[in-house]
Image 1 (cartoon, helix red, strand yellow):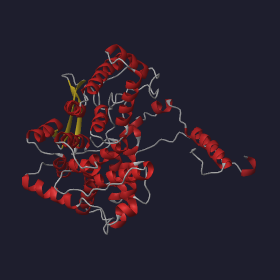
Image 2 (cartoon, one colour; image 1 turned 120 degrees about the vertical axis):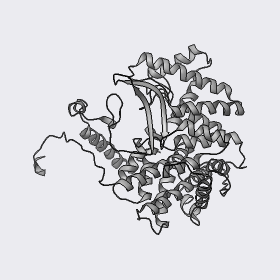
Image 3 (cartoon, rainbow, N blue to C red; image 1 turned 90 degrees about the horizontal axis):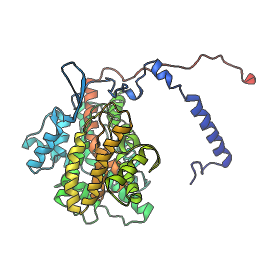
Image 4 (spheres, rainbow, N blue to C red; image 1 turned 60 degrees about the vertical axis):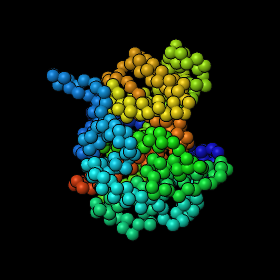
Amino acid sequence: MSEFEFFSSEVSDKIVELGKKARQSTIIDSSWYTKYDVKRGLRDLDGKGVLAGLTEISEIQAFSKDEQGNKVPMDGELYYRGIGIQDLIGGFIKEDRFGFEEVTYLLLFGELPNKSQLKSFKRILSGFRTLPTSFVRDIIMKAPSADLMNVLARSVLILYSYDDHADDTGIANVLRQCLQLIAQFPLISVYGHQVARHYHHGDSLIIHQPDKKLSIAENILHLLREDSKFTKLEARVLDMCLILHAEHGGGNNSSFTMHVVSSTGTDTYSAVAASLGALKGPRHGGANIKAIRMMDDLKANVKNYSDKYVEHYIAKLLDKKAFDKAGLVYGMGHAVYSLSDPRAVILKKYARLLAEEKGMQEEFDLYDRVERIASELISERRKIYKGVSANVDFYSGFVYRMLGLPEELFAPIFAVSRITGWSAHRIEELSNNGKIIRPGYESVCARKSYVPIDER
């Protein structure tokens, strides 16, 4: 189907012509960004983000300082409410527990729960793990969409209509709304996927009810799989993915979107839908899909996985002669981290364990080889102000594939996790909100006189 097939040929041609004109009318001389000292992407030339707010929810650290006060690249660190991500996951693994619900509590309330608090919190989430009567039939099944982020956003906006206190922005009510959405996101995502597969691909439609005794990670696998079966390691690794994606500083695009939209005083459903729109963008939530497709292209075109041939392929990527010819090695490098992304370090360890269980050790070794060679080659061939290392997206797509998650669910699973961070940021913004967020823009358009229509 062409882009404008639903229009007449004449209208379609006119829209294409006007589109070119609209684009040309908005192109700004790139040198002016330097002239006016505009921080494009709200980042300095050295990659440091422009300070736009304060947060207690999470912190990213990628540099230390030497005795002279100069920035020194360091292995990346990520903190949730002041607690290191390695310590959190290490504690959950040592105590043989699922941790995503506990991390959700930590992000929302600023401290780790004791046993009684955690039990009560899980009971609340379990109670909210349901959708309104006939919601699946009347909403999800009535307009099936192949894009599940669209299903999530649409469902969230419709849930507004089921809430008698939808516009109440008091913190207690907002917390209730956020907890409901945290519990409902896995259901909407998986049901949306199953409905889309049924209507667009002819698959059998199997809808499981959530199991209140299972964790969120376990429920995702239970809901998704026809036989509802999964191994302990599969559930543990998915739980870890949810923890690692739950939050990443207030400056990531979708969390910043949450702050911006919440500062207007709008309702929770509209704010969450806006963050979903931000996450849907491939520059934010789609990198892991690009990474696994790149690796698929490598496997299709490189028959010998020795260093020599892998390096040749990566060189072709950088020269815009392979895969999508964008000149990128997807999953390598990060806007903030320098020497390492702590999430990638953790995920790689458990990707190895999962690969061993799945008999996919050879493919894991290929990922490991690409990571090593790409880091060296990018550093040699491009001027990088900081180190180049694998980011969490490099391994997350591989892990999701080993778990049997379809590609169309990758971004929604990201949202299932990140809504915990969004919820914390919404409550933080509403609790401290004094002004609507409104950054400045400098107009660079020349003054013009009005011209009568007959003289144009």
